[in-house]
Image (cartoon, rainbow, N blue to C red; front, side, top):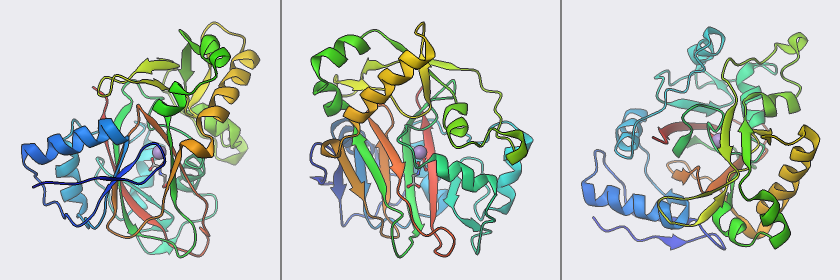
Length: 291
Ligand code: OGA
Ligand code: MN
């Protein structure tokens, strides 16, 4: 099957319409999609309407899947009120059992507030996510888009002084960084906690598929190794402000059945706000590990 991608962002993001994949796909189709991910960073496959099982089968053709549970019974329990309970999919939704709106203090809501900060998935885990697959089931009437930022072009266009500061530095990633920012680590508010150790990752790295340098500066990045915390955080803020400038962004407005795949090594993303107390939003996510 031949798939044609049209670039939909200013510097990245490709979209293919009019092909409905039926997994498992042939090797040529998988090669085409992998090449598109290297080239575009974000790939929109409109009109898929895969079942969660089909999405698992398709995602698995691009690599081993992450089991998204934190390994903590408190978080594993969150899955019980989701419509899709397989540990290889996560349901990104504001719904209990796919039907009623989540309670205001539900931990799943807190994880979705965390998604509103520019990030790459699972950089706080020992094995980060290489690809994320997100498919829309229910889309709110207003808002609820997902925005992406191109870390390859942003890296190429780094002001020289910032590049010199950032070269060779190692960033320390932790799931606590955003949670602290949200005030969600306070014991009196339910107290997010994680046993995952800090993860060191280079601030600038070379993408193996495109050969381009990319910035690794999502919001799970806490500080810079060997640098005083405030100095590191100020530098991270300057890098992120440059890299997430509107000129490096693509904003995806969801239609049910859209499957968007992104490369977490070359892009950042964030969830856009919507009226979560009265409009249902439900997406199904799978993650391919970076190994
Ligand atoms: C995610 C994520 C963004 C969104 O699922 O990893 O960040 O728009 N989602 O829901
Ligand atoms: Mn994410």
